[in-house]
Image (cartoon, rainbow, N blue to C red; front, side, top):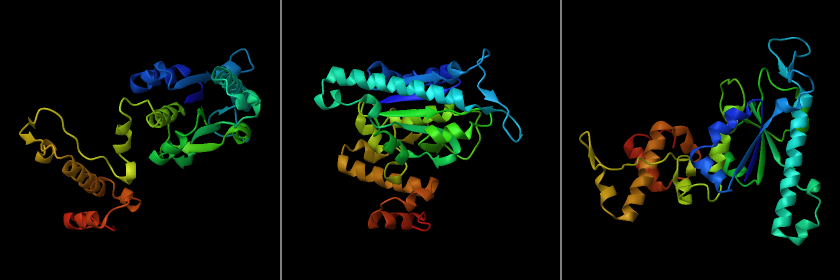
Length: 269
């Protein structure tokens, strides 16, 4: 999968993502991340990309042209990469295609005006081969270029940040974990929090007793069927206690609903 991040702070993005699981996936060629510096496409000697907004108001606004030229540069990178892939794979149907006529990638503008990012959206975006992220700064970006290039508006929550870099990094991390081969054990992604709209069950490691607290006996039993049943029940109970809003979308069995009722955590379920 290929990520392109249009930003004023490429070092911040790459230093944050070039580590741990994401960094290893990049080393293996499973992922690629290119941070494109919008300042490189400024049209003045000071590399300034902002100006005062028409109509007045506080702060500065990112200008349309540097953002647009950065996007066109990313387009050229995409065309070049697609062409190289077609030649290497020697796929006849693709060799006859004009790379410029292939599907345009999704361009995600990190904005509080967008849909709130969640695990379902991460799974949806993980199906794409290429994603472009546009990181705003100051008071935002000239609306004209946003209208021209952006396909998706996405927010990571109802609060204000200084720029779109941290939201972009969060999204790249969450999406990357769902790309086959990124996690050492792909099965682990299937049982983490928010799968099936349930939080993850509690987990334990050695030692068996810590601060007088024992690991639940069932986890020591070796009976995998009973363990999975216990884990599911714990996920349901934990979700009811900590994130009852998620249960509205969770598919619960009749026994699980009775479990919540007995536990006093049923609420409106």
